[in-house]
Length: 525
Image (cartoon, rainbow, N blue to C red; front, side, top):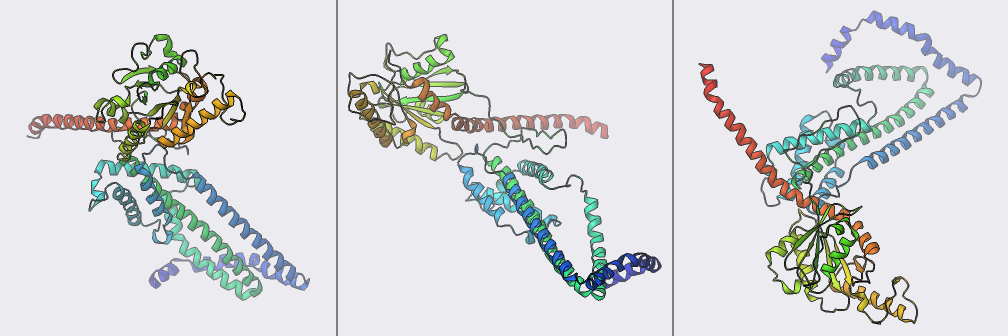
């Protein structure tokens, strides 16, 4: 270090330094002369107080700006993707815990090896969640997937830096290195100036040192905050794309689209589920009103004119799982599946179990005037258990249409609408309202579903009630959750298609290469 200082001193032209000092001496003399004049005018104390006050105000403003930047950064950070499967929730919590525990001092930005180590640790955190029994969970990741994660995370992080770090799009690597080279020289010159000021004007120098300490501390905190934010974003983005990979939303057969212009708006290319209609499964016991419900839904939709109705005239239910295409404004293109009565089917019925496993929304039809709901609860619990064993899928939302409310006591009373929020009164209408409310609460308890998921309806001919408004609104309100279940269902089949697609491509490329080898050998000879 002393040798480098000596070589630097020998390279400097001392004559030019003396000339610069003489040129700057008149300007530098203004500071002590000004302080002397203030002292002669007996206002030096007021000037010092004003200097200290403005310095504290500037320091406070800097702290406020730092806190505001921190809030903006916090608001800009992305959270977990609501379209992830349930298995990703715990993995994201572990990634967030890793990001929150980062100490910027342990991860310098100019050490590439430390950055690689931090990325490896993040990938290993996610890999260990999905492969808890593997001795080396990171080895379960293929090389192309690893490169894809790095590429996506780096591109997203670059857009994030451009969006939130001022002038980052103009700061080149060369400028950073040049600033680092001259920072030591500038620091020595600044220390010489501070020493000279201490000799010429001790009082002003002490005040200046206090202000410099406050300013450096504030700027140091801002720099540390920015570095910590950058490190946390790096961990979160790396972990995000690792989870995207393990949840099946990051696929190799999709080429990323880079932005055509240097825009700060980030457009991500993720695995898209194949375009497939929403699957609405209608379940329930025999004579619960399943087929009548399907007919009522189609009477509301555009498909009614096409005659695509479930048959309820000759038989109480269809003999097999039967799909019908339903289209209506506001609803994603859907297939409605009518099913036989659950009480007449075997628990291991392959067709029914396959329909349940592929359902995106379930309409569980229950008759209000029947108390035998043990079969419904048993099959509903089986559905819940089946999806709990498949954390890569989201369970379909379950909506319970409560049918045959017109058969509740008093039997002769039927004068809808019935206001369940105000079941007061002593007349037959109020009694009917209370009985509907009692049946709703009983079904919600017996099936272990929220009361808001039970919708009382009437499907009898000439008495259609509460389908076009309340039930249809409830279906539309659960369309987002149903679309998420559909997306994950379709991604599972998309991953299988991707494997075959990549295998065919690899075999084709390998075959073309082997076929060209004789020609290459002849040219080489």
